[in-house]
Amino acid sequence: MTSPLDLLGTWTLERTIDDRASGEARSVAGSTHLSLLDDGRVRWDESGVMRWAAHEVPVSRTLFVEQRGDDWFVTFEDGRDFHPWSTETAVDHDCPPDVYTGAITVHGAGAEVSSWSVTWTARGPAKDYTMVSLLSRAE
Image 1: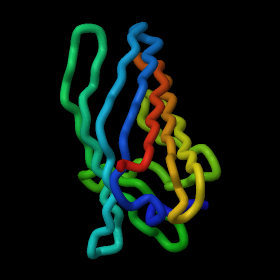
Image 2: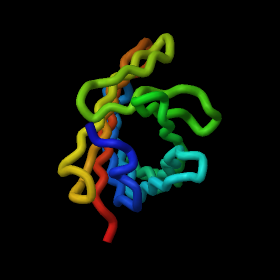
Image 3: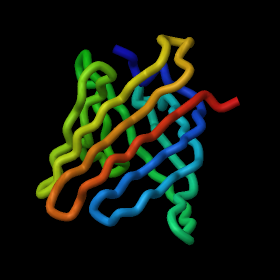
């Protein structure tokens, strides 16, 4: 399994969101930066511009990835648990009444990682979308 430590650095972010509930397609173009903090956590910062129809909105978020025993876990900026870090199996984020299923896919290994992706599918009473984030090494 690829560790978040293998992904430190700056990545170009291209995200598509297929919102089946609203019938809209959205995209985000920006960057993602993973940095190692003094406490051993990885800070995961994203920023970019979301576009759909005639709209453009700046977007950003910060997550953290922390080691718990032999495993890693992703948390929201405020410290709430998000999901286990796994590049081998799908993960779930239970957020009633919605259910999110995600997957991290890494292309390459160690310093040879050229790109990675994060896919989330959300389903619930008011949500039905798939969000795919493609990340490639920034030049």
